[in-house]
Length: 245
Ligand code: ADP
Figure 1: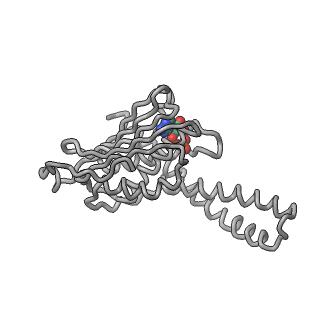
Figure 2: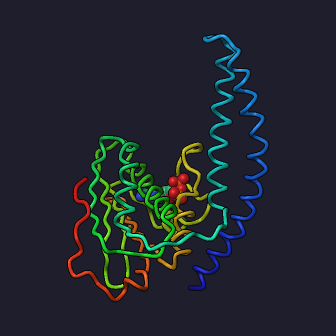
């Protein structure tokens, strides 16, 4: 518990620092992007200047995206909580995600209804997107699979995302929730995805576990407390929401 508390304090300090920098950087980028895009419109297609300026715009867009992620990470708004069904969030997020994943990756989804938690739906969606994006990146261009599942076990909603990707060693595993820790090449990883996931899960009073090895891939398991009013009314048969999407 002490380690978790220290980790949370460290993240909070880093979040505040990074958020301040990101905010100023965001303001600085507004004229860069606005004006370069204006100049671009007036340059003849195929010209050398246009090609150079397109590279400048590409760099500024990447910087803006990074800054946005940092702002999302450092934002301290209290989540707006409703009673939400984790299975439904998974299936609606999946509709958005499937278009973004390489077709070579096989995805299985098995979600049951009845795992109801008090949560901010957009934050839960963010957890799923970040875990599935990492899973897809761990698989890369090799054939592989991602298995997403939701179940209610006792007073907890369990969401798990498993992949057959390249896994991680113990030294990496120990640092994955640290903000800005990444093993991905510059420009591909920000190291914020799991720090955001960790912050959201802690903010909802849940826990997150990871099991990984380089032969079999990785499993992330998120447990969230079942909403009070639904805690005693254990639905006898949890109807299946989706299977093998
Ligand atoms: P990023 O994806 O930008 O690197 P994250 O915080 O999402 O940042 O992840 C941190 C690191 O954790 C990754 O760089 C990677 O080394 C490791 N990681 C996360 N998810 C997985 C996974 N499913 N399989 C293997 N490694 C992973």
